[in-house]
Length: 102
Image 1: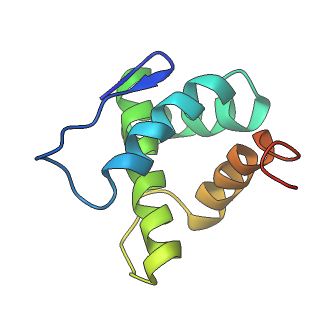
Image 2: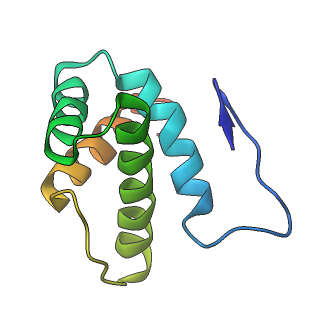
């Protein structure tokens, strides 16, 4: 569970995409004021006729699945274009540019 900037994970429950999904919530909130993420969330709201909190949940779910797919080579059916997910994942990676690099 993600609350503000903290992620809580059960030691007994969860799937392989649980950690990336929960951290995606933190980064979606962090990037939600950027034009691309704001537009993506708006698109999800309109296409699925759901409120913003459900759109954020859907985006976090799809990012979690996409990260697992990239790491393990597993294919999954996404309701969001992979190019959109990849662009957001790269934006998250860019937050750490220079921090994690030697």
